[in-house]
Amino acid sequence: MPAVVVGTSGDTPEFDGRTTIYVIVCVIIAAFGGLMFGYDIGISGGVTAMDDFLKKFFPAVYERKQHAHENNYCKYDNQYLQLFTSSLYLAALVASFAASRVCSKAGRKPTIQIASVFFLAGVVLTAGGLNIEMIIVGRILLGFGVGFANQAVPLFLSELAPAKMRGALNISFQLFITIGIFIANMVNYFTSNIHPNGWRISLALAGVPALMLIVGSLLICETPTSLIERQKVEKGKKVLRKIRGVENVDDEYDSIVLACEMARQVKDPFRKLTKPASRPPLVIAICLQIFQQFTGINAIMFYAPVLFQTVGFGSDAALLSSVITGLVNVFSTIVSVYTVDKAGRRILLIEACFQMFISQTIIGIILLKDLKTTGDNLGKGEAIFVVVLVCVFVMGFAWSWGPLGWLIPSETFPLETRTAGFAFAVSSNMLCTFIIAQAFLSMLCHMQAGIFFFFAAWIIIMGMFTWFLLPETKGVPVDSMVDKVWKQHWFWSSFMGDDDHKADVKVV
Image 1: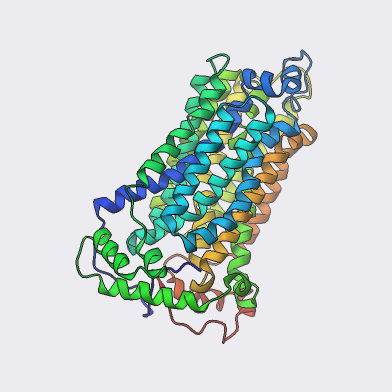
Image 2: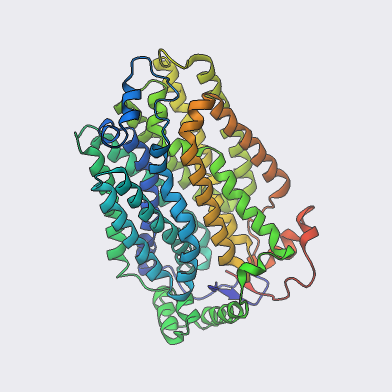
């Protein structure tokens, strides 16, 4: 299994080195994997709201949308239209487990390059699609790219970064996702008026970050941990000196060697995850991914233009509203970068639950009261208020459940099951994303305004889960999680045995 950097003391070790320009360049290049993912999340909803795209691939949806007495909630209800969006995430689920093995055997850098190739192939098929089968296959290839990128890039960032910057750099991956969503919304806004192939331009531009990543990957190095893990010891030490900007890297080098030796002793990390002592972090990781998606965030992000058209905006105004929410998403994620290590994880998650619950509930009440199945849409003032509420919802998610849904699983697993556990986190996220993407438009049709009460109910559940079952991990060294977090928790302590964690190791 992949190793992570360890030390043998109980305190966080301070290794020699500085944050070099080369590390910053490598981090920016690698983070384009997040930009690709975010661009795809944002581009799907805009494309599926474009009339030219619907006329070519989903004529039944287009006719229903144009009908004089259309059902406001059901105009976009079509399983194939939803499959266009959701197929990517089902493919990413499958790919994440294969990517975990490639990451271990070949390294982080080749895994990122493979992700780029999958993305480019997917872009060619979707942008040049002549029939529904071509674009679905293209989406599946994009999904393989997402699965490989989401497995390799966070590991790459963690292993390359100095210990004191690891938390911020992990969240920077989520930040690049939000930037990708914003850029996609901007692209959709301008291409929606280019007929008849504006949708092709939107899909084709997904190749830009993929090209930048594949070209940039020729400039980045493999991580020292991956090199040493694969017995390339001298090269690993040379790279470590390069990225730290100092000659004396013996302490950090020794800690990497120790991590690799310990990792090799664990022959089957997936089997070890079935042990009782592994259940607390595994349950936390999986539940966080489920809850992250059942906030309704990706339903909002995938289908924001569709949603805003539903409440009464025209096509251009709906896309512009999506641009606004995308911008809110970016700046709110930056807030998380600066507050997560100061305020802590729990308080951000709990505060966001209140914020998201209130906004979802009010949206549901407005739609239930004033948006009828047929007839007029919401008034202009009410429609604008819905956009404001969506922004409040996105704001709460972006500084809490968005980045922390990835950060917490990365810091709660012990060394021997960390990458295996993270693979479960990635695959759980992709599964839930697939479910929401495939079901949302049908749920909107059948549940109507009740869809927002559905997500609001989930927010209550996740708030209770956080309050009672999620421990605070701010400032707790990973090697101390068992003793300082799990064994002290009122519920999770019952799963902890004295003999389950004998090694005194430290992830930094």
